[in-house]
Image 1 (cartoon, rainbow, N blue to C red):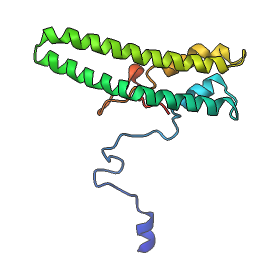
Image 2: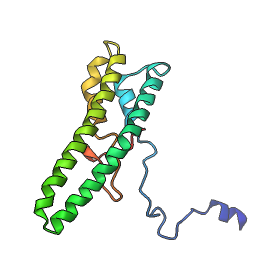
Image 3: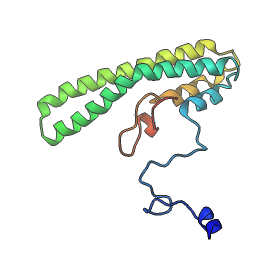
Image 4: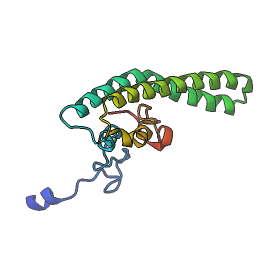
Amino acid sequence: MIVRAQSAPISSGMGQEDTGAPKLALDEPLPGEKLIDKLKLDGKTQAPEVRLLLMDASREAAPIGQKLLELRQSLINLELQKKTDEVTKAVEAYTAAAAEMAAIEARTFAKIYAMLKPNQQANAPQAFAIMAGMFQPSPARGGGGRGARGGGGQ
């Protein structure tokens, strides 16, 4: 009887795999690791430096990402309340925050690009596409940042 209990599947009571938590694909690499792979960075010298750059950028971007989420929520509420006069101000604030986020992405990628050897630069456009939205947090339910990727950096 003990042996049977030890081999029994663990269940949350909500169905075998439905715990209510977001599903994580353990075999899916993080965006930063995809970037490192795409650029074929040296694992001993370049990759650790890029990981540090991405962590620093993620810390810098965190309050901006939070602001973007709050502004999105505000825009929805203003639209639902038919406060069209306030929507313009909220859109302007959102545009400014989105530009700040894009600037962080661009600055970070410029630093990464400066580390690349000539043979690694060929993959830079595809690697930069991986960075788009990398530092934006995911909304509380469903969806993701730009490009429907979950954000959060490294």
